[in-house]
Image (cartoon, rainbow, N blue to C red):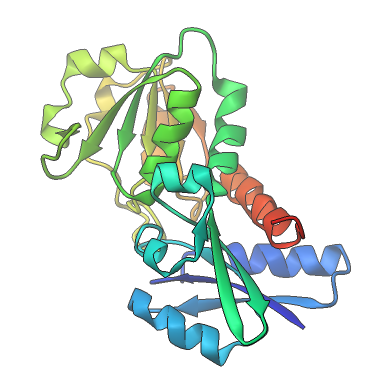
Length: 250
């Protein structure tokens, strides 16, 4: 039996196990299973690999998308440029393990945004600066957008939430939430922006998919914004991960 799974902490919000379990059933893939592996420290990846000799691939979620890099034997160029990995392919060479890192978030983000990207969408506000944020910024730059990153604390090349002025909101067409705010079980939380400044000209994209309509998106809908949920991204990046795990050329 080939095993696949998800590492991160906590994992109560994740739909990945449900998605792959249903995929295996619907597509009659009888030789594979998918499990959640909540680890409280990234160094526990070594013990997990020793305890699960049938593991062939892992997804990586919060908070380890960048921390995992030092444990990998190779990193795909795209993932290396982003500085975050969310897919690991596990190869066994005799008694040795070889871990290859990839970023399928790029596929999920691209597939989610392409239907909404138009000629006048040139300015984006990206909330958060973690591994998912780096993937979002990578995709948006490829699409030709100008990006302003927002962090709770002042960092290089970022602004804080207190720096988001009415004038800035008026210039922005797309706002992307890459933070875990609004994720189950904290479904009432949302990024600290002035939602009264939003309107029909704004698009809100939330990477959180549980719940599908987050407090962030609900606030946008009340103002007439177009909203993009995180479910399309989940499905697209999951299928990309499956492709990576089953590609013998990689």
